[in-house]
Image (cartoon, rainbow, N blue to C red; front, side, top):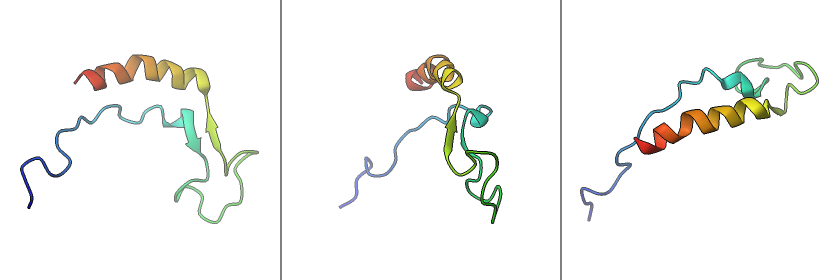
Length: 66
């Protein structure tokens, strides 16, 4: 039997994706359909570690608090 507690519950939409270039698969999804590569790592995950770190310590705690 279903209750009021079933389902997703409350959630917060946080960051808006402006930093997506810092963690991306360049050929991912429909970006380059049929392409075999964009640069040396177009088919692989590329990450700008320092930017991801800064984003994590600045942007995520307020979202968790909310």
